Length: 615
Image (cartoon, rainbow, N blue to C red; front, top):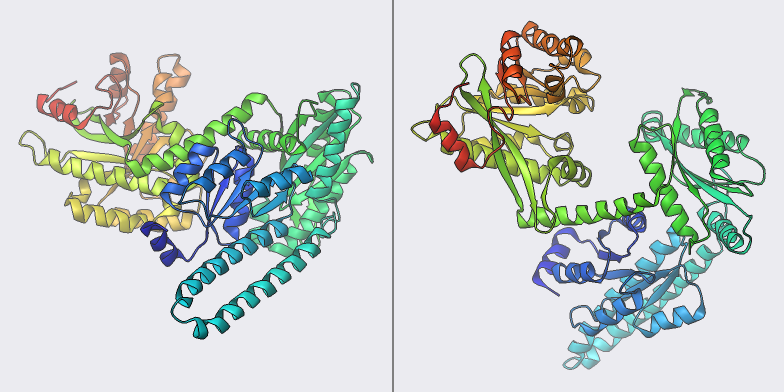
């Protein structure tokens, strides 16, 4: 075991599990299940990623899918068993293949267990626990055997005790597994079919579609919007009551021959059989949405809830029912992304997008470790003097293969994965160090400012005030020269906590700017509650100023709002002299854009400062 692995186990006391599966949704579901059980979970899409993961941190257990392109699970297992570092790691195969030959082959290449998909949550957890317990016991036995060379008589009883405990534990685990395999095929809360029964019916429908050319079916995958808010605010008892009511409402909107199942949480699936085209599935989805649009009258509360629905037509080319569910789930998430409370029909391109997104998430984690990011700086110009008053720090990701990836692509992924804290903190630190260097230059004004964007995810992943204090102390930058830009979306979440954070930053003389003002819907109702110093006008409004007089009205209105509240107005995206003249006539305070300069490296920014340009 590597030194890093020993340190990791000592600090976290977590068992590390590596999941190897080329299906993004399988990785997401398995990772979620095992993470909730307290395990440290990593993911790999193929053999190359799996080998890199093992070399980085040696896992305690590997969950390995059989059906993978290029290098299948059997070959992956054989390769792992030939390597000294991975030869002893237990491998549990996962596959929808349930034939005895497949299981024998799995054990023949070195697997220690075999889980047939679809698997039950409890069965998966128990099998993982069993193999981890077995591996731990085996390691204990090896240690005992080493010591037996010198103290055979003293350690014999201990070895027998350990073996006996292991045998008893294995018997208990096998007994529990037997019980789990006999579990009912219905959800205990709603009494609907569960995932296992649904997949069995879906498998039969798929087989029938392969045999009968005139047989059609479709799957609807449904996830309730805002259910977590109801559950967290009103309690799990009300949440369970609502789930039961939703199940009954869904049943009322379907035909008796259709199958409705609860997959767990607030997820439901519907199998529509003997339908002729996708329009019938769309009509069913509309009927479901119509049913859910009416308020739920619960015992003590009236609750409104809606759902996002993914639709997949039952094409006969699908090899496994799980693939149909995967694509229906992908379509459901697209419906959520488009605004929720709607349906979306699966397009094959969506699966490829999901795979690319997963790969990008993996690359982003590596990029943070390898420091593949850099910062460029765009000047901010005072429209009163025409000179540079400061710079905005803009992060860039230089991917080693894909080249330059824009922040609009990787920042949302960083926020979702929790990597945004490390990225934003690094950008803030780099920008402050750079500002200190510039301010020490003889041709630079000491009042030069530095603007840094803070992503929404940073406020939930990090103690931002403490982080800012530490950076200011390290860089010795005057807080009055630091400007933090925050988007409207941030103030919509946990506003009371945010007020406290922003006030603490203001108390340190740091200037606060609301970025992209006017692109959201909450600006005016929330603006007076927060201690902002300036509003940044989104470039889309600046771009439309010259199109017609109605569009121009948005910019002077925003400038007027800012000035009426004692704030400055900053226009971004200024590209033409005409736009600059218009902004000056409206008494806009500051501006930035390609008319002045694009974002440049620190050295070019210093040359720009030294040139003392004036617009």
